[in-house]
Length: 216
Image (cartoon, rainbow, N blue to C red; front, top):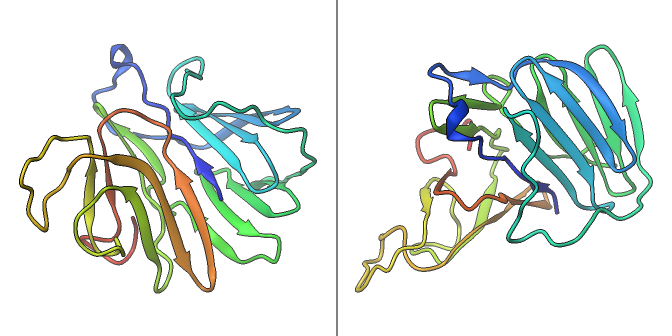
């Protein structure tokens, strides 16, 4: 399971124009991962275990580490680190994270080089006013489950959802949102699966290819 977190930035520093995370300019290695500085923000990678990697992204000078959900600390795990002019790689005994430098994009692979999940090459993570967006590349025949209490099919593919607890009395078969929202989903494709937990309590939206078959 891969844990992905996008940190909500402060309203006091909102930019009026659309800005992507940009290109990597500096990397600082830590005992549990790395911190990367880009042209428009900062990202942090923490290796919690061989199967769990946490990514935080912000435009602020420091990360807000408060979480209602994450209560554990990274274990003392061995991971290898490689860096070239084009990319950075962190690898555990279970998975490999590849970070493209220009522009910054994150891709997860198994140790057998099977792609699990990847940022869309064109968009990745960006800020547009008060909104923060992250685009993920849809894999062939990929299916999705999760997000808590939702109406409709168990397979979320081809649909969009709003994560925001709502007291919706007498809701219909296609109503959204309703009572229980959990910002976690599982992607399944090519006989493998991964999980993404979005550690953020703000209202959020998940689109699993509702308008196209390119990205989520």
